[in-house]
Structures are given as C-alpha cells and as structure tokens.
Length: 300
Ligand code: SIN
Picture 1 (tube, protein in one colour):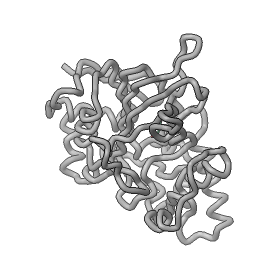
Picture 2 (cartoon, helix red, strand yellow):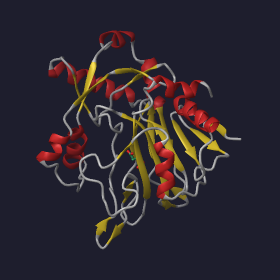
Picture 3 (cartoon, helix red, strand yellow):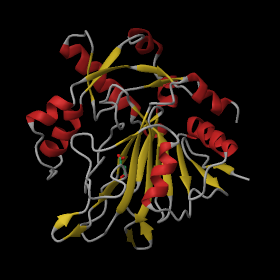
Picture 4 (cartoon, rainbow, N blue to C red):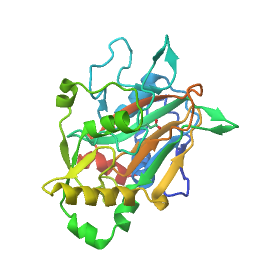
C-alpha cells in the first residue's frame, strides 16, 4: 500500500511502497495527485527507471513539453525526456549544464503553462559524504497567505506578463552561462504571455502567488516603474527563508513537484569534475485545470 511520509518542513513528502516502473494503480495515482497539492514536492526513493518509465509516469499528469525553442532530437528514443548534466562526451555537454540555476517556475512563459516537473537522479555529485546540486523550493500557498492585505487588494485580478527570453538573457548576461544567444526566430516562437498574479490552485482550491523572478516581466496595464517596484517586492517576499525547502538528492530518486504551488532553482554548488546527471520531463497543465481530472485528487 502506497505511503505518504511528509518531511515536516514547509514542503516535501516521501512517497513509499510504489514501483514507478510498473503500471500505476488508479488509487495510487489519486493519492499522488492529492499529495502534490498538499506537499508540493514529492520524492520517490530507490526507483529503477529507464527514460521510457520516466516518460510514461510523467505523461499521466499531462502533455510533456519537448524542447521549448527547437526541434526534438530525432536520434534519441525518448526526446521528450530532457538531460540536465555537466557531463561531456567528445568535448560536448550531453545535456543542459546550467538549466534552472536561478529562481523560476517552469513553463510560465507558455499560454498553456506548466503543471509538474519530473526529475530522475542518475548521477548526483558528492563531496565529503554529502550530496551537492540540490533543488531548492519556495511555497506559494504559504506566500499568498502571508502577503499583506493591502497588496492582495491592490493586485486582485492583476495579470502578470511572462517572457521566456527574460531568464535566458539573464543567465547569459548575469550568470556567465555559455548557452548561445537566442535567434530572432526563437524569440518569435516564444512571445510574452499573460497569467493571473493570484491563481486558485486546482487541487487545493486555495490561492497561490503565481509569479516568479525568472519569467515574470511586468504587470499588465501598469506603468513600468510601478510594475517594477511591485514585482521587486513580490520577488523578495516570495523568497523569504520561512517559505523555503531544499531537496538533497540521492541517486535513483524520482523527484516531482507542483509548478503551480512552488517556485524553485537548481543549486550550482558543484565543480566541473563533480558530475550531475538528471533526466527531466516538463509536464504542461493540459489536464489539471479540467475539473474532472482535478477531482481525482479529492477522491483520494
Ligand atoms: C529545473 O529547473 O527543472 C531543474 C532543477 C534541477 O536541476 O534541480
């Protein structure tokens, strides 16, 4: 029988006694969906999974986003399963070496936004017996609850504009990323998109703050200086220590998180010879806003 063991921190639970390489039982799926809403970040330890297993499990939650700015790599059997790694073969990185290494929420730059990320730890760097390259989160249910009443009133019904190029350019300009500059065609593929600043979470029915420093560029209809000031306030508020939780990886962990109720970053605390290799599916919110699908969690 599947078990949910909360970390006791502001986010996180371990999901035990389930084998993700096997077909998922309906009852187990409901329990996992419910736990995603309640705990935000779920760790399934000691899973033996190939890329096909990661893809099949991820696909239960919605459509998997492939390469957001290019064609799928037709040479790979499961191109929808991305590789995050600083490992090189023949002098070339085998995947993205610095994906997600600052605060953001995946896929808010798309009109159909992101629901979950599913990551599988193949190689985790260790130093002095401790794992490096953790993933850090902040809890957007708690943040919304803690926001001052005047901010909630002022931003009631406000729309944030999210821009893919903001994070990409920030990584290149401010973080020394070697990723290539976006081409004009890639920029055209990803025009800015609107989403509400406050979202009702489809599983919990509670409000969350839905903006992030990575992609949220401005508040629609507001003069730039006022919008910049308000967003700077929200970005500082949402990263206060009391809302934060770090997941420390173990190899063979499958980690999934709810992108609607959390924001996150990958911690870049390891060197070029300390190899990290993660497989990742980014799952879009193609199912979770369907009331029938979200109700599955209520039945758990
Ligand atoms: C991501 O932002 O999806 C990557 C997180 C990580 O590598 O820990």
